[in-house]
Length: 157
Image (cartoon, rainbow, N blue to C red; front, side, top):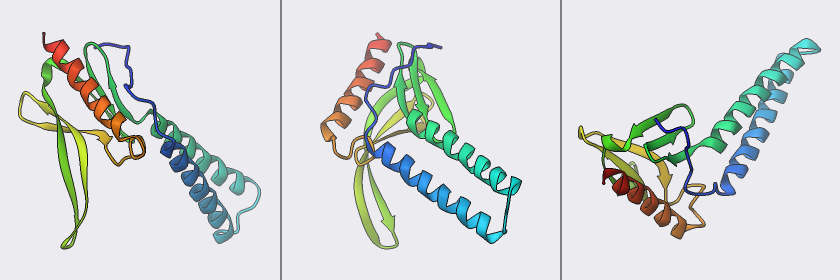
């Protein structure tokens, strides 16, 4: 499958806020672990290195997170796994309105981009209107949705 993947949008500044937040949380966890277990010397270095490695890997995944397109298909990179689909396996690209329920309360109505496969299965993308990339840029969300649809339609021709 195509090796030239392009993310049709620039990541939002919210990603850097998340990465900073995670750095602070892991620094606090490091400090608490060192204090809790009375670590010294090599123990301190080991805990600090392990949690720093976790942060680097997590930060890299957060930065790479998103939807990528190529002439051959679509790549969805999540925090834990990635998924590739050829355009010929995609039946359609749609917007879906999601409602989050907590008990009897409805919290938020959100638009997400959903990919429908020919076998009837649907694949959630990492694109949602109120996410870190599009919260302050709603027009960009619609433009990205249209770009993915256009890529799919041109691949079908």
